[in-house]
Image (tube, rainbow, N blue to C red):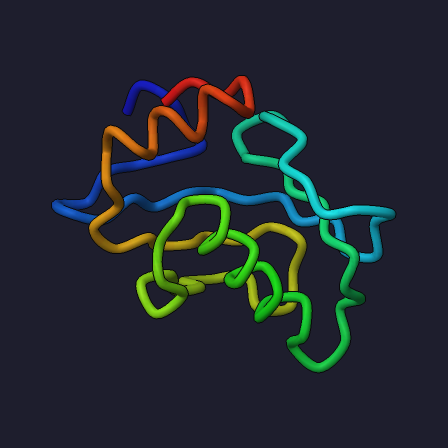
Length: 102
C-alpha cells in the first residue's frame, strides 16, 4: 500500500478517517498520521455524526450516499469507510483541490 490512509479493494476505495465532531465548520483538514482528518459541525450523539459524515463525504466525492458505508469505528473518532465505485478521475480532481494526494 503506497499510503496507509487509503486502500483500493477491487472497485471500492477504503479510507481511514479521523473525525472531529462539534467543529466550527465542515471541512477536510488533510492528512493526520495515517488518516484523513475531517471536521464536522454535528455532535457525536446517537449516530448523528456518522450519518452526517457519510452525507458530507457523498457531497465531497460527488457520489450517492448509498455508495458510502461505515466499516468500523461507529463509536470512535477513528473510522474506516468504503466508497463503492468512485470515479477515479473525479476523485483525483477533488482530492487535489484539498491538497491531498491519492
